[in-house]
Image 1 (cartoon, rainbow, N blue to C red):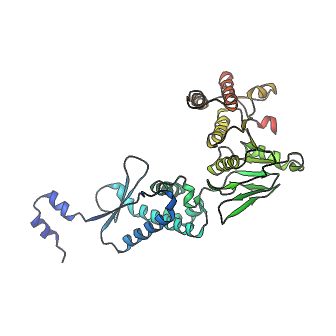
Image 2: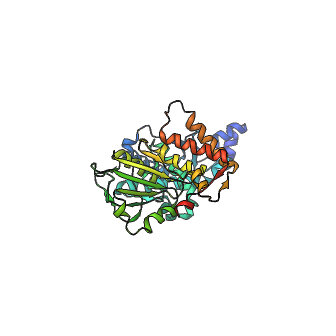
Image 3: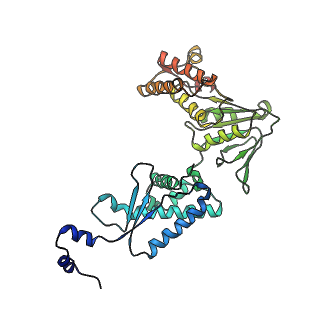
Length: 360
């Protein structure tokens, strides 16, 4: 039989001892996995099973300890008790965590992939916004020591576009294959770090990457037949700053094929150079990547309207210059020298321009 408050007060004559006696026993569950991601599916299934059983059958309060990439781990107490205001949302946090874990287990077992947007709209009332989904997916991937969040089979929505004059076979894994059709504008397919994109090794290929979708559409759609005069050419656009999927596709394309030349066409401004560096820095092999952004000198010679650099763009240019030129572990390539030259000229003239003036 449980004691009443007066009985507790008779035994414990101080406030501290009374609080300790009334504090419920807590069961601590450490969610951080010591196992590498090679056994991720098995570890995840076991963890979810024990977590659900603990929530359903345990009479003790649970404290979930999560590694969040910082010095202090994130703790979630359920059911909530205590005076700390941040613990009041623990019920909703546990619900989001458990729901995501169950969804991941389901996707892993069925070998299917969902987007973050799909997960959010499957339970808008619970997740409230897509940032919460991204946050908890990051927590889960860090606790299971995953190299990429995409291993959870929940990925960001596709953004980049591709147009190829040739058929491109894509091998995702042993059981899953897809392809990119020739002469068709398509979204870049979902791929992972083990995807094989193999082209005919006897031919040489050109990959032309555009910063802007408008230029991409102009080249691809307004030509009578691109494949007739641009053989073995692949057009890609990340619609501004590229997403992880677009950068990964370009990297896998370079790794799986030796005879590929990549040309980056961006604006003559610090943002354009930053976008080009986004592609370059994400690629393991950069020898075949060429910076072909519109130059400020060419824009001046065409007497196009130029704009002044903003303070933010000046700071961005200086930071990029320092990062490229002061790295002792890196030997400057021809592409690096071209980028440095463009940044220096933009700072010297204090001007910027867009390649739309030349290509549209």
